[in-house]
Image (tube, rainbow, N blue to C red; front, top):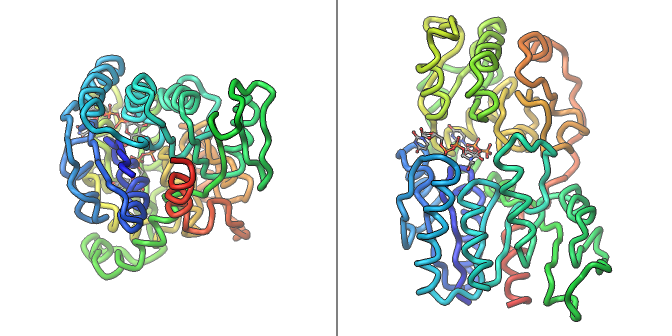
Length: 380
Ligand code: UD1
Ligand code: UDP
């Protein structure tokens, strides 16, 4: 089989790495399209090097722009490639503009489309990702959900065929006469969990980040912020930074380029400075350094989707700087608290005592990528 994967933004390199590895092991022909949505060394290339992802067959070099321009440019350029490649199936990952552009190009060419990390919903339409994931799900043929909650979300949206807790449910809304020629959604587990299992041990052999930053395990916090609703509203960014300062404990803050730009643009308006404080702002770091930093942190403060899950995988309490999350199970299990950008709530949550709870295996058994490849084999 010839399988095309479309990636472009940091979390997609991590989600795709285990799938590409499993496809190669099963001797399928892999063709990799990088849209160029992320392009700095520390946002893109470092992940290819560290995760052993093969060089992309094409880099479309689209880069940054408004949502419509960026998505449109990707759509046009992806179509040109797909018209030449005769793919048996195309995989898209997550919920970025790269995901949506890939999905639209594929469905208009009537090539089978599979969505990895399907069925997630934040129910917050302020997020560009919410539109991207809903639209992508609704034009996919195979929907690889990371959790049972994701399957249930799709069931509520009347998908043609859903495998829920092992049982195939055919929707009365199905347009197809045979069940497998219409969309199929099922829980395979999370490929980000596969990645953690594949890379954490190697990360310990490779990373010197704790030594480089002079950190002892469990004596510091890790923070990341990049959601537009936190970075693009000066008051919100101010309130988050104010909380970081008030916390007083060492906070390692690898700063996303969007956020770096906003902090410097808004410096006067923000009237806040993290210089010579407990907050150490550094450039984005590679995946292996991040795994080590996360596992040894006392707590993680983030608005990242991936890092909420990584906190859970590692048993590190997480404070999510958002009013809601797609990863609701982590909240239900008592390992994640939603604070939004509220200074007082953030500080209070960092200072409160977190009783250690069980961590049920919500995200599969670490073999999501293999299940995906088996299902692609069966279907195509
Ligand atoms: C994108 C995704 C978001 C994902 C995030 C992961 C969309 C709509 N958003 O958000 O879902 O969580 O990636 O990190 O697809 N920039 C650089 N160098 C880079 C990349 C970006 O300087 O290599 C700067 C540019 O100023 C750019 C800004 O960051 O305008 C935002 O980049 P963009 O890819 O549009 O969105 P993200 O915020 O990264
Ligand atoms: N990550 C990283 N270096 C960083 C910040 C994040 O390797 O400096 C990893 C993180 O461990 C996780 C993924 O990037 O695996 C999450 O990406 P991001 O937060 O950019 O996007 P989101 O998950 O919110 O879509």
